[in-house]
Length: 126
Image (cartoon, rainbow, N blue to C red; front, side, top):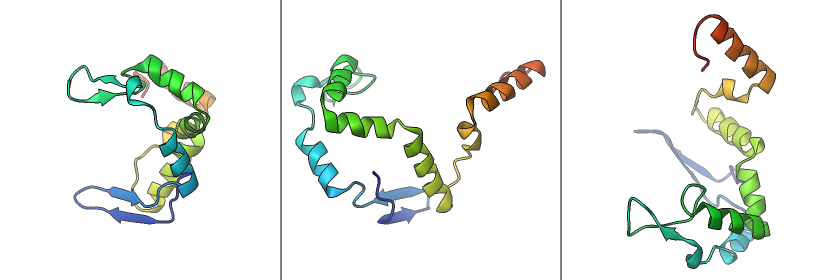
């Protein structure tokens, strides 16, 4: 879903990636048209002047909106998917931005084995 072909990258003082357009225009339009109503948002607990609708703040409204809005549900599922994470990390690595996430993509049995090995050597697993 992300358009990695139209990319601008600045490396200093830290990597900054701009994708423009980031999404297919039809998908962007669909998501924009179905943007959640302001009535679903709540005041951010730390900043009274900010409204929030997220997995952390206004969680019930957020989950209901995602579940009931097909386009946002698909987009949300994709953002949370391994495919999205892998494609993003692959893109960043190919452009000289190494987040050192190799171990994060190991299979569950391999991660479990590493964790048990660490415990066996009296260390906390990473």
